[in-house]
Structure formats: C-alpha cells, structure tokens
Length: 403
Image (cartoon, rainbow, N blue to C red):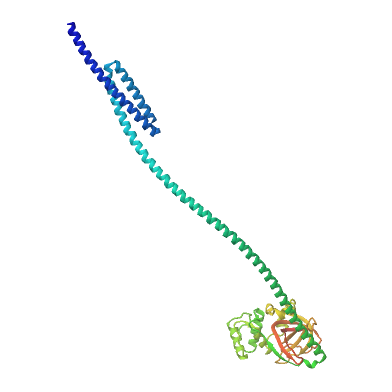
C-alpha cells in the first residue's frame, strides 16, 4: 500500500512537476509578453508626452503582473488567476497600444497639417517681406519725388515772388508814367488855357468862336427826382404832355422824352441823359429861376474842377456851386440861352462853360465880375478858337447865378 501510495505520490509529483514546468513556461511567455508590452508602452510614451500617465498605469500593471508571476512560482493556485489577470492586462495593453497608435497617427496628421500651415505662412511671410521691401523702395522713391517737388515748388515760389516784385515795380512805374502823362496833359491844357486867357486879355476880339457841344449820353445820366420834375415841366411847357410833374420817370414822361428826342434828331432810352438836358437847355425850356431850382444851401461846394474834367461820371446830377471870375458873358435873350465862361477861383487855367436859361436875368453880369453859379454838370464842351487849339472844358447848366 505504501509503495502504491508512493507510486501515486510519484505520479502526482511528476504530474505536478509537469504542470509546474508548463506553468513556468507559460509564466516565462507571459513575462516576455509583459516585457514586450512595457517596451511598446515606453516607445509610445516617448512619442507623445501626454501618455506619461498611461505609461505609469501600464508600468504599475506590469509590476503587478510581475509580482503575480513571482507568486505563482510558489503558489500554483494563484498562478492561474495571475495568468488570467496578466492576459487581461495584456489585452488592455494591446487596446491601449492601438489607441495610442491611433492618437500618434492623428498627431502625425495634425503635425503634417501644422507643418504645411507653417510652410504656407513662411511663403506668405516671404511674400509680405517682398511687398514691404517694394513699398519701402516706393516710399523712398516718393520721398525723393516729394523732395524734388518741394525744391521745385520753392524755386517756382521764388520765381513767382520775383515776378510779383517785378510786376509791382512795373505797375508802380506804369502808375507813375500814367500820373506823369496826366500831369503833362493837365499842364498842356493849363498852358493852353493860360495862353488863351492871356491872348483874350490882349485882344478881346479873339473871343469870337464857333461852339461845339459834346455830351456823351452813355456816361451822363440824371436820376434825381428834382431833375426828373424839371424835365417834366420843360416838356409840358413845350406841349409834349409829359404827365404829372411828380419827379417819377413813368411811361408818359418817357413817351414825351422820346417824341422830343425824335424831333430834335437824336435817340434816347429810358434815362434822362446829358443830350436831353443840353437840348432842353438850348431850347430855353429847362428850369432857370431860384424858385424852381432850389435854395443856395441845397447846392454842394465840394465838387472840384478836377472831378468835372476827369471824373464827371461821379458827379452825375449833383447840385453844385462854383465861384469864380467871369472871363466872358453872353447875356440870355428871348428864346436864346446865355453863356458865361467862368474862371473857377479866379484861375484862368480852370475855365468852365456855363449855360444860362433864356429866362434868367444875366444882363448885369460882365467880364471881371465875381459870381457864384448854382447848377448841374452836363458833361464837357469843346470849341475851336481863332487863337489856335481845340479845347474841351467842363460844361455846367445854371439854375441861377448870384453876383
């Protein structure tokens, strides 16, 4: 029985030994697998820093498996469970490896995409750098152009300033020449007037002259109510039906003016001109008494001889007064105006032709008298004399004269 028991024990030992050897072989295989898994985990961990935690977990699992395998060496029963645990751990490791492999693929793809993006960015950066270089070059060129333009502008400004200065100098010279010409003209007129005055004093017979009236209707225009009223009275007096004598230049008055002008052989528009005033005065129709003309204080003594000769347009139909010495007096007669040649201020170089209405009393006015003429400018009067030159002098139509 003991031998049989020994044999059975020997057989059991052999069987157990065989089982142990099998388990040992399986344990070695599992250990090899665990080592391979650990190597794979380590390799994958080096590829992705974020797998460090998972690697630690696998290492811990591997350590547990290793501890279990060591325990199987001494305990058969635990080896089986440890084997199952190791197999499960291996599966998990395999799954983890697959997952990590997929993640590595994704990361590789993302890396490639990022590399492509970086490459594209580098290309774009190179393009931008080229554009910046081009713009810098263009800026430099523009700066040079601007500098050149500024220099050109400065040169032109200097030239303009020089031309302006030269223009000013030329204008000043021209103005001086104009003034000199006026002075010479005035001097010539003055010399002619003085020469005529001296010759008249030496020979009174030289005062016989042919008179020529010169009125420019475009320049001498009368707009005051008093002058309009005087014209209305004159036209009504002559039978031209100028309407109400109210100083308003209406259609009835304009019609009468037009009829009168047509009969006298000149044309007239819708204004009272020097031509009309001259014609009415020559016909002895226009005003002539202090009552009709106004009071002496109504007449300005501010109008100068220079204004009457060079700027008569500024005088217009202003009521003016001139005081001077009579050089010649032709008394008014019935139906014929009188005339006076007046040396303003007693200056024989400042002679004015004064026309006196036929109704005015000028019989007592004689050569050498000092008189004041109250009237209006009607332009200039030109005449040629036996003494020689043709002379233009201011022409005034008198409303009344005071001795």
